[in-house]
Image (cartoon, rainbow, N blue to C red; front, side, top):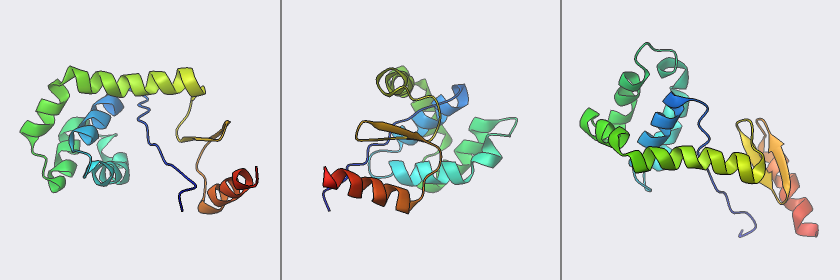
Length: 128
């Protein structure tokens, strides 16, 4: 308890990912991770669609976001610019070039990791 602070940052790889990141941000702090989880789970469907944003709108309506709200989110340049800036910051500050990437202490780890990996890293850092 109190040993780890998780910080999630958007790292969009293309224009659709920028839009989807903005839509998740627009859900609000209390629903952000829930919406993000729904979007990740359904990514194989909407990402391959001829109308990815139309498909995303279908997914996020279960979180109370109708098409008008999604359109308003996408029209918010400050919001979309912030998603892009998150990627730029990750690349510049941490040399991130893949997703997922985890920064633990001063080390960078890319790729999927299991719970044991994180537990071991926290234990290593706790010994220092």
